[in-house]
Length: 189
Image (cartoon, rainbow, N blue to C red):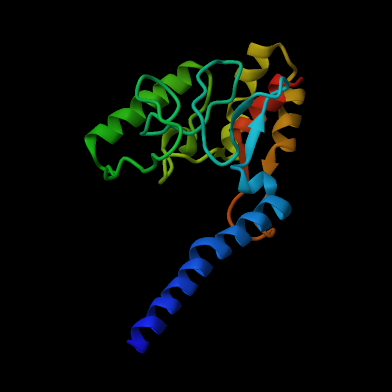
């Protein structure tokens, strides 16, 4: 009986520590030291309305905006839109005819809009939620965006430079341009 009581006390103590105290400690640290990150890295427009997260890509189709990577999931458009809980690639093999046809159609569409296709404007990311494009993909869209907004090419290139994230710790990964922050900067001009 004494072993049973010790077991129950141990379980109750560990449950209080792991189910309440530890999460409370992490919540307090997150909210005080990293409130932006802890609350989803939410971005707002000039009116103070939340327009998205810096961590999740969005679909832009208007010529006034930079276009992001294609996504195989409809997380921000249409009747099946679901802003959270969905991620994943198409899992189509590189020689899959459906994937090749989609890429061919997308490349033709980009060329018809005056944009030279780059890999990240043709292929979706592994998660389907990547918010970044390469600086080369952003540069390929400069003329289209500048013309649609009535801006100079230099102004648009300057915004790209200001919204380009460098390599992590200066050595890991590649530079990337967050499409949502770039488009918000365009709107704030």
